[in-house]
Length: 288
Image 1 (spheres, one colour):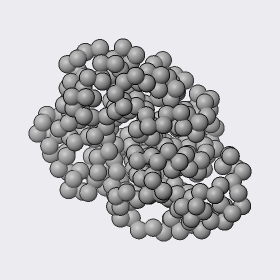
Image 2 (tube, rainbow, N blue to C red):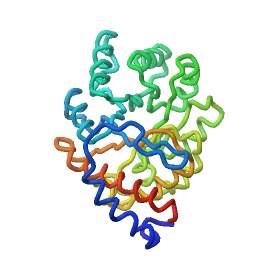
Image 3 (tube, rainbow, N blue to C red):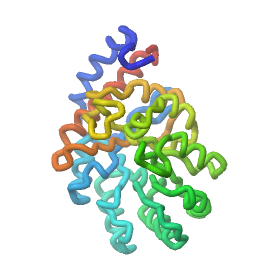
């Protein structure tokens, strides 16, 4: 069922929730949405704050009322010293930030030392997951480090321009025989642009869906058409319904790539919409 064909009953439930969500207090709340057996964490990909330093990125994350953050190397460089990593880890912890992962991290170099250095970085910082961009050649080599460090990897699909992993299906094919901790970070915008069905792709991924980057597009195939979540044409409600059906327990991280020097208003609007959708789904008992 498309978002445009939701039942009247569902819309009656969700409309008050959407309005109420804008009035929610901006307090950090871990495990915000436990619906059925799902535990959906609305978080932030810190790439959204790429024009700002780490302290500002932390403050803006708190302004969004979430503790969950996936850290891009703008906010903790991959070549940081152990002391620099420790200081950053303390800054995140002191602010109440829960680190759900790092990335996107490139694994384009077929170099075991480079791979190990990046896993050491993730281990020291306390990242449980690395969102990554490997090649067909380097991806199998990551499995050894996943097992050694007990850190998950989630391969990020990057759409039609990505010569390695454009679609969720291309990732799933590559990881299907690897350790279960090797999986997919689905970017819903890039997925839409390839022409495959987002929700069907999520179902196909199943337990290999380890992380999500969420956004919205005014044109489902338009790379430069990103808008605040809820203002576009991607099936946001169906995405969350599918996550609930799958009993998803990972993060859904907003990656806001527009308005880079002033992203907060659009991100706040996006969070309000997503929180309203989730409240509406719960109130409607999934009858959509």
